[in-house]
Image (cartoon, rainbow, N blue to C red):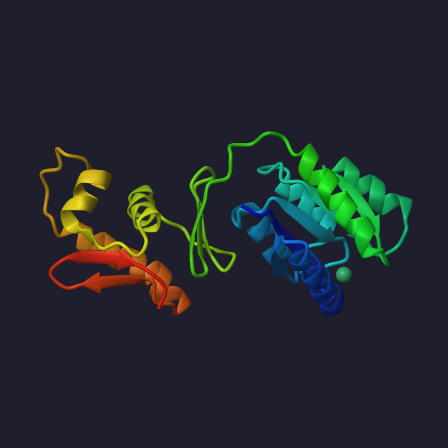
Length: 225
Ligand code: CA
């Protein structure tokens, strides 16, 4: 599974250039153009590393790293526009792993990224299940659609996980009941339909995609299109 990198950078030309180079190196890439979105995605997007500009709209990069470090130890490389000692010191004080001064040579950035990814503390192994733009990190208990976090209850999460683990395969209501609710479940079998409806509204309807399909008289299947 390739590493996922988030670029938080409001200068579109730089963000685009770095994105293309990283994709070329085989990384998966997400982007955010302001500090608030960047913080949200860094916290919930299931990324392995964050490239964080300091001068950002909404929230500065320094404020993003300060808030991020309350909850997450994801490696962060700060992008500093000026070679000012203050920015570097502040960024590192607040928990950034490294910094690089703009303009930088892409080879140097790639080397810093490889180093930061190697130093990453041993976390629970990422177990990413994907279908179209949908991604579930079972270890971190996060679900995103094209990088946008989706809030699910724990039951919704379990139903979706079963669908993702068996995509292209039609699952009957009984299968859901057995695997998600347990053998001793005595309630209504239409509880499955109810949870499928919740998931559709949070995924298919919310993002305008078509992933969860009904197969009449049989059950449900997760697949693209
Ligand atoms: Ca900037």
